[in-house]
Image (tube, rainbow, N blue to C red; front, side, top):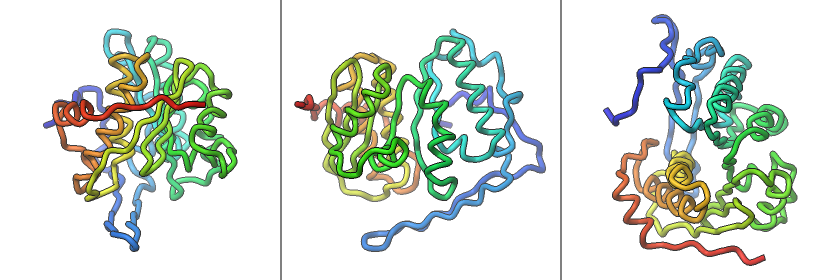
Length: 255
C-alpha cells in the first residue's frame, strides 16, 4: 500500500505466530507503558538459510539497515542478521546499524557483546546518547560533543550520529562534527521517533555520504514530524519533510 517491495519477504508456516506489542500512551508525569509478546514468534525463528541470495546483489540495492532489536530476539535471528551483513558487504553495499537498545529484550552487558560485531563492520552508527554512554562505557558527565569525540577516536572510519533528546542530534563524519537542533514541535506521540530519525538520516546519507549536515537535517525533520503523529507509523511525505528541512540550518561544533 505504501510502495514497499515485498517480493523478498520470507513467509513462515501458517501455524506460526506474529509478535505483538501493546502500547498505553502516557502523558507527563505518567510514562507510556509497552508490553511485548514476542516469545516464539515467527520472526524469532528466522535462520540464515531463509535469506534470499538473489536479493544481495550489487544491482538489487545499495544499503542494508540493521538494528540492535534483531540480534536480541534469538541466537538464530542474530546469526541471520550477521549473515545479511556479510552478504551486503560482499555486494559492496553500505551498512548502517541503529543500536535501538531495549531493556525488555536484554541487559546492557548482553547488548554490548551482541551488538559488537555489527558496530565493528557498519559504515553508519546511530544511537541515543544515553545508550551510547552505557554500551561504550562512557562517563555520564561527558558532554555530547566529548562523548562523540571519544567514539570518533575509537571508530575513525565510521559516520556516527547521536540523538540527544530535546537538544537535537550531533554527528561525526569526514573528520568533523555537526550539530542539529531539534525542531520545535507539539508532541502527540514519542513512539517511532527514533526510527523516523534513522530514516531521515539514511535519506540524506544515501544521497551524499559526504554531506553529513544535510543528512542530519533530514533526520531531525523526520523525527519532528513523527512526534506529531499518533501511533508508530511515520505517515508523512518527502515534500513535507523537505519543507521543514529547508527552514533550518545546522551549525559546526567548535572544539
